[in-house]
Image (tube, rainbow, N blue to C red; front, side, top):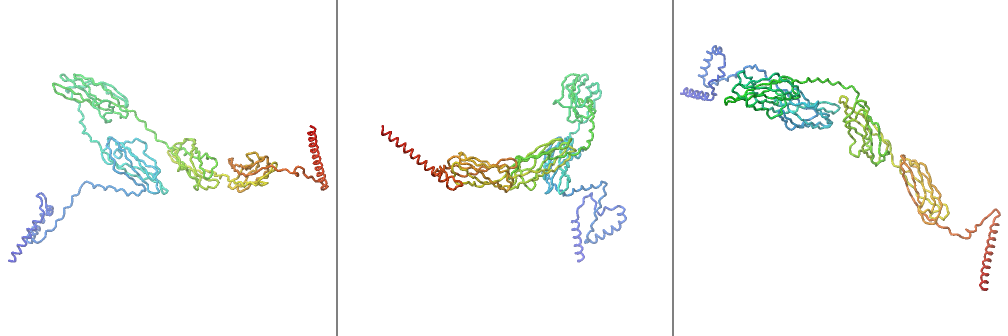
Length: 616
């Protein structure tokens, strides 16, 4: 009983194991049977024994079969595409989407390049190629370099895909030239562009010239010849066999210059005839860019016979001749020396610069070369020490072109900084330019000087008058004052003038000469009191600066001129001599006698007048 139970359990295990095994298709071969026939025959006995043992021991697990080794392939393994190294250059590119363009059409887009801090993008240039498989675009310029000189550059792409371009992705090389950290280098970017090609029409089978038994025959004398860019006219005669009618004849055109190198001026070239003979006129103009060679012009002849319509095609041979293009000689390097720029003249307006007042700085730059010109010149003016600033906010100007031996004057407004002391100041002038010698660039540096002169400053002292306040007519008046030079420059040709508007006193002008900085000029003059009245004695001081500019200072003082009151001492002065008072007493006696006589005369005159009155 125990043995029967054990056998029942083993049988169940075997059945369950068979259900879990994968079901193989009829044409599949178990891995264990993928051995050679010879091995199978040689080990047949052992395999049989093993099968018996496996059947006798259902609990034994089948050994896993080895996977079959893959058969070796003759095809070479594809090489892995090289991975592009990470960008470590200081230039970054920014482009939104991959541009797309159809073959034969154009596309425009911009790509932005940004330099890291401390670097400058000098120029960007698209690299072209005549290989359509790598550069499927038209090449319209000799070069595609654009100059920037900034930390950011937006390069404009304007591409026209060639009509015969294949569809796919193309990577357009772009060289970005930059400078920074004392080095100049170039980094190349690949701009992806996807070209979609027009669906190629299935080429029509080349028409087979009809056999002699065809119902239409062609007659043409010689092969026409035409020059590229020229025209040719000729006729071709078509004749139908008996019973056939030529309905129409039409030349078949094409826009492919390689198969139809002629201009297409009409919408169609069909001519109707309706008879058994047709003379078709050809008027062809070869395109200027046509290549030399034979071309076969397809012509369809449509005919009918007994209600049946048909078409036969003829190929009309035409030979196009093109002028051989002379090979352009390779350009020889220009050995002329690079032009040198200098500053030939400097001027300011006004000529003398004063602190706090704007002025115009004018520079004349000259191209000293006798044969080469300069172009794209940038002139930058930098005052040393920040002595001046530009009134327009920029100290640079641009000159597009300057021929050999030519000069150019540029001007810019400048402002001296506040409190700028008088003196000579240096200004650096830098000129950066391109030349017509191999398109090479060059530069020049010069230093110019300008002079700042402070305006003269002077003060006038109060007027000192003697006698003080009042004088009498006829008296002499003493006037004194002083001029103080309180500035930092010399006062030249200093004059002082005393006067009054009413003419009460006489005028007087005094020349003081030059007064050095910090010096004093004393003024002293005498004027005469001419008329009675109250007046203002005016002092006017006039002087010049180093450029001859005149300045005036004024001052005044109120003064009174009166008439002096007369008395006896004023009428008869008391003369004296060496004898003491003898003359004084003589004069007194003479005066008393005169007075007495005068009184007598007056008395007698009055008495006589009284007597006359009595007599009357």
